[in-house]
Image (cartoon, rainbow, N blue to C red; front, side, top):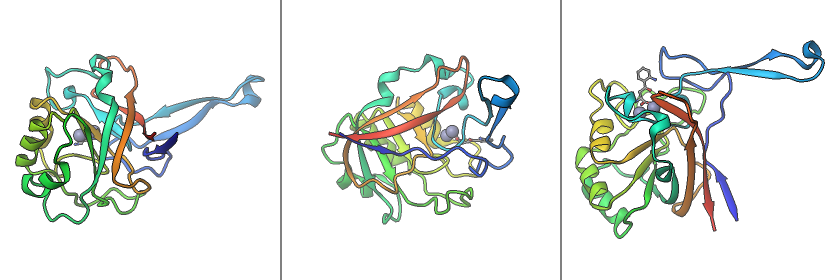
Length: 207
Ligand SMILES: Nc1ccccc1C(=O)C[C@H](N)C(=O)O
Ligand SMILES: [Zn+2]
Ligand SMILES: [Zn+2]
């Protein structure tokens, strides 16, 4: 069994959404102090690095992280290389996704060039592409980007339309070391009561 880790590393240089809480890990107690153990603490925005968005992130009435159906975050997935496409629209994706019903779709855009710098501009799905995902009953999409919408978007129309279409959102994956093809995805959110998102450890398994 081959396991590909598609998670970004959390460290003090992990870029965050501009203005959001930087990631930090530090020892609250050292082994020297306690005489027995090192004990760490973390501080972070839940939208850091590889994470999922709960609908509550963009919809006051939306489900929170601890209420999500976990089966969406585990199961058959395909990685599609869209790095050469001009636009992520229905027509350009149709050929790539033909016959791929019910699989999670992970889009490899390669557009986040420097992992230590928050990108300035990113590609995003055109709304007609989401109609195609709906027809294919795609349960989740993943992107190697900090958002499924344009970074400056305030209405978050891609987030909203995906939610209305019952498609879950995985952001900030790292697909640089994986080829196109079919895998099993595992990317489980933490059980954080009431949260709008959660970091995940995302892996692809090739059998
Ligand atoms: N962290 C933020 C802080 C302020 C405003 C937006 C964000 C986001 O994370 C939005 C992004 N579309 C996201 O879902 O991850
Ligand atoms: Zn997010
Ligand atoms: Zn998002």
